[in-house]
Image (cartoon, rainbow, N blue to C red; front, top):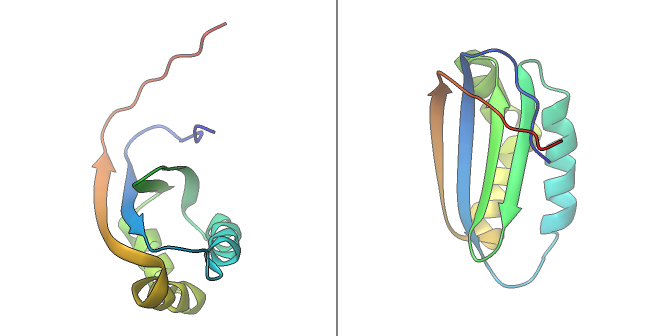
Length: 106
């Protein structure tokens, strides 16, 4: 599903990852983090896809909202578990979205 985002500018957190083998509780934690993020002030939406590489893009109102999410205690626990058992590698990028446009086929 494509996220409905507001008028620009806003911010995108782009999380790209390569997973380890097996679930090891990943799906449950991922679902919990998604629900928790949706309740955070400043959260605007999310898009995610996974094949060999997973890409999750979350959208935020401002840098302060992103910082609060990064510092959230439950999110910190999830990140630790990710480093320990769910990811072979990952990279996080933060970008300011200056412009967007969309297309919808009738």
